[in-house]
Image (cartoon, rainbow, N blue to C red; front, side, top):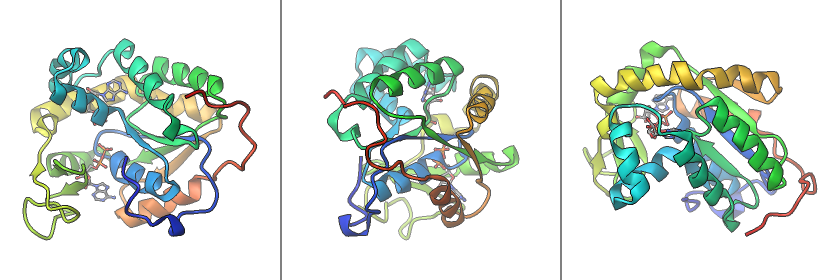
Length: 243
Ligand code: ADP
Ligand code: AMP
């Protein structure tokens, strides 16, 4: 988690006190917006993709299992992802809320998360649905570059760095994700349509879904996101966080 970009004084005085979920196809801007929102409230940005890539780079047993699946652009089995998420949100830094990026991705994951939030004393999540024409996604995904040091997200077409190949924040080397190659992108979009898109109806039925036009500029999307996220007032949570 990085909370350094926004000075504490500039943060809203209200706590988030809930889970915010970014839902949308690969390339719709979940990571870009989730980082900004998490920074704004001083809460962790929880990207299951980043967590899994970290396991892969450390070559843990989970990473070894996930690697070939991620390389094919398929979803990692729920059994592996759910335990990882449950352990992460049990940590103390999640007690004032957190922002999910890339989780949940199946109805089974969403049901599990409902139970988990209930058990940890959080109310219902706010779900930001990033709506975008699929034709825009290929350019966003194949043009995406990430900083190896801080994870900042750029795009060679739409969000270039000042110095080619180097992060504006920390000068770190920019890399392309192996699954952002055109051959893999198609399977990722198919996995989204089949397994994740049903979550739109799931959360709409529960009255917690906010549609946001993700084709607009990063700043305009950010404004829509801010308007959609109404922080829960203190005292609204029902239980205590175990650490
Ligand atoms: P996701 O996490 O949904 O896969 P990212 O946040 O990583 O998506 O964004 C995918 C790519 O699109 C990145 O290269 C990012 O810089 C770019 N991007 C994100 N939001 C926008 C936007 N509103 N307009 C143009 N490009 C964007
Ligand atoms: P992302 O960084 O969100 O684009 O995720 C990269 C890859 O990690 C996905 O294509 C999946 O293989 C895997 N992944 C990330 N989050 C999940 C999840 N919640 N469930 C299953 N697989 C996931």
